[in-house]
Amino acid sequence: MSAHSVSKITETPRLLFLSLVASCAGPMQAPPDAGPVASPCASCHPSHTAQFETSRHATAAVGPRYVALRDQSDLRTRAFCDSCHRPVVGTARGLSCESCHVAVGNTGTSNARLVWDRNGAIRGSFNAVQTAGHRSAVHGFISSAELCGTCHEVRGPGAFHETPYTEWAASPSATRGETCADCHMSPTPGQSSPRARGPAANETGIVSPERSLADHRFVGPDHDDAPSLLRDVLTIALAREGDELVATVQNTLRGHYYPTGARFIREAWMEVAATRIDGSRVVLRGALDSLGRLQSGPLAPLALFHDELAAGLPAESAIVSVRAMAPLERRVFRMVVGSESPVISQIIVRARYRPASVTLLQSLNVDTLVPVYEVASASIPW
Ligand code: HEC
Ligand code: HEC
Ligand code: HEC
Ligand code: HEC
Ligand code: HEC
Image (cartoon, rainbow, N blue to C red):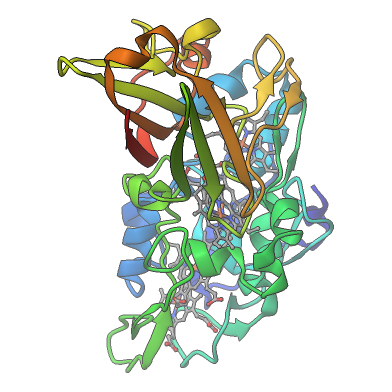
């Protein structure tokens, strides 16, 4: 909560955004809910606001899985959860525009140790034209991986560990100066590509020049556009050696591990299915049981990539092993096809991902209907 040292408030009615943040008192007290319609930025930045409203940032404090896990924690841990999911400079639903645009630094790149200048200008990356809405200032922190990393590096109790920032800092992306925003605020989720161009504001009487625009949807595994983020992050090449299937899996992602982030709740695995000579299909490895859970034993997936946790809910649990694939890592998996082999005509291997473990959701008593996404697939005649 080091941000308190810079959070003194002076009322300056001239500046629109101050009246919003002025009423934020501290981490245990919910800031007022700005809500989509009342957003003080929407009138002049309608497309940024519309994109942001589809993002999980906007609703980071009200996701049912988050609420269930938070509410099972003691008060101290709840305040810890809130520091990122409902930051002091934010709304009751989650992050606000100011959570990032008045951030000017941190006291360490983890655990929400952001420093906000709530009496200063809106921070951006270009020399903005004058507006009645706010003062503007260019500030290097807004474009940095450290802005994202201060929340996207979690050292919490139990299994609440997230390491995208430290993974990124040691990655080929960092070496070439490719930041989180380069991949996560481009028009193609997860890939560094040229930004769309257009006016950054739509204020009556002000001519806004054409700018290069940052996508504010923050597409992740919980966004409607998740398939475009996840598709082809891995590639699979198959070969046959006698009765053995050899699957070579390559992580094409250079920015951090696959998967990264909240690996305590995600599931990422490899499925092996077969088409028999009679046309019927069978899942040999990675079949889901009747309740939709991943199985162990002979039907267990060919490979798992999410964190292996000790028994219990994440807060009391611990990470037993990290199975995620490092940037650009290649792994080979082998499987003896066995007695079915003579009646099989084709084998299909798929890398699958779902935003939450059904086993965990069941124990939390929250909706277990989570989509399963295909990250990659390959087939081989048998
Ligand atoms: C009355 C209209 C108006 C309101 C309200 C408004 N803005 Fe702006 N904003 C503008 C204009 C005009 C620009 C300049 C655009 C340009 O130069 O291309 C701008 C620029 C910006 C920039 C770029 C700054 C830079 O130096 O790079 C950011 C970021 C921004 N606004 C965020 C916000 C946020 C966040 C809010 C709500 C707290 C907000 N704006 C409210 C009109 C407004
Ligand atoms: C080279 C492009 C690239 C860079 C750089 C990059 N990412 Fe990603 N990111 C991706 C792709 C592709 C995915 C989807 C695959 C995955 O989930 O690992 C992803 C997924 C994510 C996820 C969702 C993970 C999950 O499965 O829950 C988070 C969170 C994330 N990135 C944060 C960051 C942060 C923070 C940084 C900077 C420190 C960053 N990324 C840098 C491409 C990138
Ligand atoms: C999670 C952090 C984050 C949040 C929250 C956020 N922004 Fe941004 N915003 C950025 C980053 C990063 C940039 C791009 C900086 C760069 O180009 O390097 C940016 C750029 C902008 C710009 C400049 C034009 C452009 O598209 O690059 C405007 C205007 C803007 N944001 C408005 C908003 C508004 C309005 C909201 C709330 C509805 C908002 N932002 C919420 C991180 C954020
Ligand atoms: C104030 C803290 C904070 C900052 C700063 C922040 N994030 Fe996040 N981010 C979160 C939280 C909390 C979530 C999880 C929301 C949820 O699903 O409950 C999240 C989720 C995400 C996701 C996954 C969304 C999904 O659909 O699962 C992506 C991608 C992401 N952030 C990218 C970024 C990038 C890029 C930046 C920097 C420009 C950034 N974040 C800065 C707190 C932050
Ligand atoms: C230091 C910042 C930070 C803290 C503290 C934090 N989280 Fe998160 N949390 C994040 C970020 C960033 C993501 C997005 C990661 C991703 O998409 O992979 C996230 C994602 C999640 C998710 C997955 C999204 C969803 O809704 O299913 C859950 C659940 C969650 N957090 C619960 C918690 C709980 C409970 C606590 C307190 C014990 C907590 N978090 C503390 C930053 C934080």
